[in-house]
Length: 295
Image (cartoon, rainbow, N blue to C red):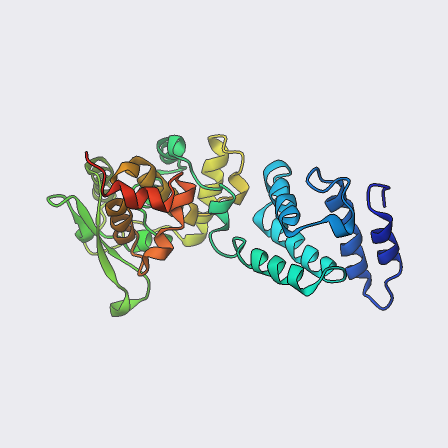
């Protein structure tokens, strides 16, 4: 360990008895990274505050490109490590702050910025390996459909007069929920033209690809157009892209835009829809207030 780690910390780790080699290695690795980081350098153990640990985690995410899972791993190690030193009040506050961190198993690609951004949406569709893939990508990037919903879409579900489509959501058979989704004429015509050109029956699925092939196609297409985080993309990222782009374009509309997005995505709880606000650069208060501003 380097001299930048306080001697009290080195002595503590060296003196641990009965701990597993994995625990000792985690503590030692954490101590090296923690006390070398700019937010912590020069501090002794007793000088560290909860806000310092949060700054350390933000430093790792912003400057070291830690994934969300890596950040939470360091957060967990920090919690175990400092429980050896700090009073109960400190640990209670630290545990509360760590609980509030984004969870990696949900919406991780949003918090890590891994989605198809607005300028890349049309080039992404154009770069699809085949027209059928482009059609599926259109349904998710332009309409916000889940992968399973895109695979269920049929010609009978497309309403050109009303410029909307009927989406069959989660579930199977008669149990899945349906919802109307408003769409733009260009994307609607593109999907319809593909279906007719490939002789799809009116009640049959427009897309005949497998989920697996579509997942792979998302990564391959992103790589082809030069998206550097292509390995981390998954098909569901296209739905996230739709939601973020939707709010960016309608930021000034406030709550009506958020409610419409909730309906478009088929969320049962608007709190689920609100995860997109910060990513779209919009504070919840701004969205709420926009509904009361004079046009």
